[in-house]
Amino acid sequence: MENKQSLGRSGEAFAVRYVTESGLYIIAQNYRCPKGEMDIIARDGEALIFIEVRTRRSSYRGWGEETITRQKARRLQAIASYYVLQQGYINWPSIRFDVVAIRWTGKDPEINWIQAAL
Image (cartoon, rainbow, N blue to C red):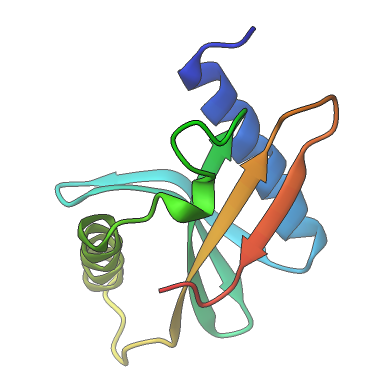
């Protein structure tokens, strides 16, 4: 059985493939700044998409999409703001926050991509 970090890395790799195949362009993975970490930053046309990936093997502590608290949502928004300012955008881009929740209970994972989740 995989440990938590290995499961998380596997889930993020799966999510990257999934959203790329769906047409998003990946700008950064595991972006770190003083505000925290963003799993995936992507572009969909001119919009920046900030993606939080949650991978679970069971619902014991809730499925991934159920675990985004208000505090976590505020942190993700702060990370996105930091990223936009750091990149020196002249005009504030269109931003969307997505959650990719992966349920890896069997051989093949189930994915729930919630667009505009926050």
